[in-house]
Length: 175
Image (cartoon, rainbow, N blue to C red; front, side, top):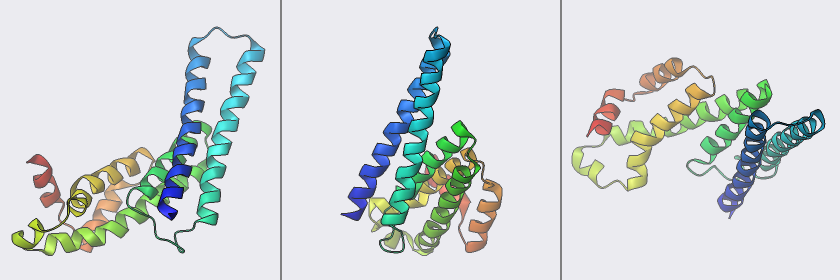
């Protein structure tokens, strides 16, 4: 129930970000007078503020400590925080995006270390979700970290020190 509620909140925040992006496009292609341009600027600021407020409210009312995040929830949250940070220059939002992604990488890095310790037969019995985590999810998180302004090289070093074999991930992706 908590994951479903979080997903709906994230979807609402994403919708608000998308509305702000559409207003940005309209602002850049339409011939608008100053009043209309000001109205669009206020609309965009309102949408970014509401999306940010939704995420903060979700983190306050449905904290990770009370119910751990399901896979991809922090990634989706980070993507929204990053978009807000880039669009508005909000450094706090950008920093929160990086923090969420780094935490998610370290959280699932421990799982990947375990998956990579399995022999081929044991590995073949893993559910698809676990195999997704080892390959695509780790790569997606690293890409999002890079897009959000995080230090991916440092994170890869941390994960390698944890015992993750990135050569294995690359070989799986190349198949």
